[in-house]
Image (tube, rainbow, N blue to C red):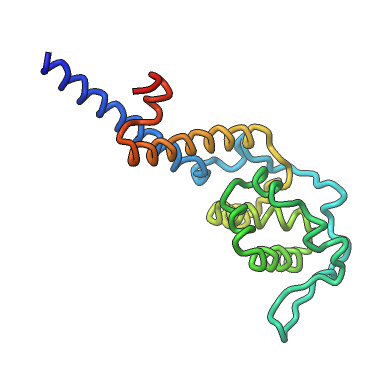
Length: 196
């Protein structure tokens, strides 16, 4: 009887540990896109931009040498209010650029304005590019160096679904880790089997 309890305890502990390791690996791979083949079905390279993303004029964004900052001469059409909000950032590129935008809004705005000035594009396209740069700079730079211009502006329902699924799993694992460290029993096991 004691041997059975010991074997059951070891098996349960091993299974729980393996589930946590699997969940951690799964969470770490959620934003990896570095191994995607250019032109794969998850990236749309043939693009037609909506009218609102074309530049209104090439002189809309200027650099102020005294303040060392970029600014727009047309805030109503090319300022922050003319672009999409923080939730648009989450839908298009995920949590990393979302937090960049929330924690360092001035740096984010400067990056968007600089991209608009250097590439001669509109606000929406510049935002979408900078969101994807902050999400995965290596891939963004690779695509640029190869002359590819992926459509970062279009919200892809499949990507949104995957992000929501992975975020839910990540939050569940995080709750389990905190719950286990506080109570000594697994939150996931408690959910599956009921109370201890």
